[in-house]
Amino acid sequence: MIHFRQRRGLQKFAAVHASARNHFNQERDLYARDNFKLNRAAALAEWRSLGAA
Image (tube, rainbow, N blue to C red; front, top):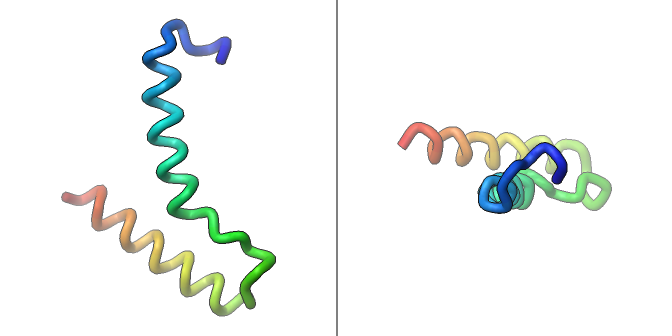
């Protein structure tokens, strides 16, 4: 928090960071490696399509 001069900047960063983390965080230890990689690839493809729009 020390690097943000205004609270608004911190809030914007936290909102974007939280949505990205929630999208990619898939609790790796709960899935087999192959399923994890498929889910991760699908999340990345969706993220790229959202970014391209």
